[in-house]
Length: 276
Image (tube, rainbow, N blue to C red; front, side, top):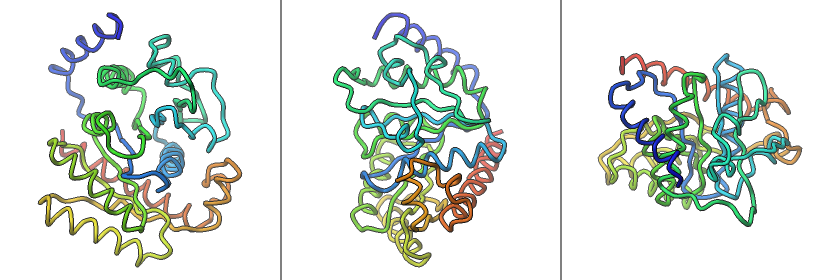
């Protein structure tokens, strides 16, 4: 890391000591394993928040395995790797997608992708804090799993939205994510979305299995944000590289994303009021 970035981190640490924001707005969307629909949720959730008149920045942090640009059928000449290489600051890699929604795209399969370190994650959050006044919510679409870099990102976020699916392996992997966060003393609020549910009962059972395990073994609580059904429209929207909320706004899964988004705004408002 060059000296400029190191100085920026140190200055930000000093500023944070005397100027803690009363707004909780950084959200990391994560999953214990790949294939749960984390990026699908992040993209549609971010878009719906923007349609509810919230200013949103969505950042793809699936290092060198990015697919947000594919899912949204967009291209950008600047990506997160330019920021991590410190050839561009964060503002210069932001892409305006629509009214109230900005994006930072990742890279996929780049041979010379910069080696991401803990210092670079600190640099990212330093840069986010410098522009957070422009946004109501900053959403970080994490890499799957819970390696050291992902955990560092989750620890520094205000909310962790864990996207899981009804498969027992996905539920178990979500439990492991919560366990690692608890062991590290994370204070982020933990919310769960159960995606790809065949019906409400399957989603409820999956969440209850996870919640009971977290409560029994970790003595902690998690909160359900909502369910998303497995329906043909969701699959078709992905195949068409189009947001579900544009492809079929009346589908069951789209209606559930509306509900999840409205519920999150309520949760965030309550948290901010309590913080104040």
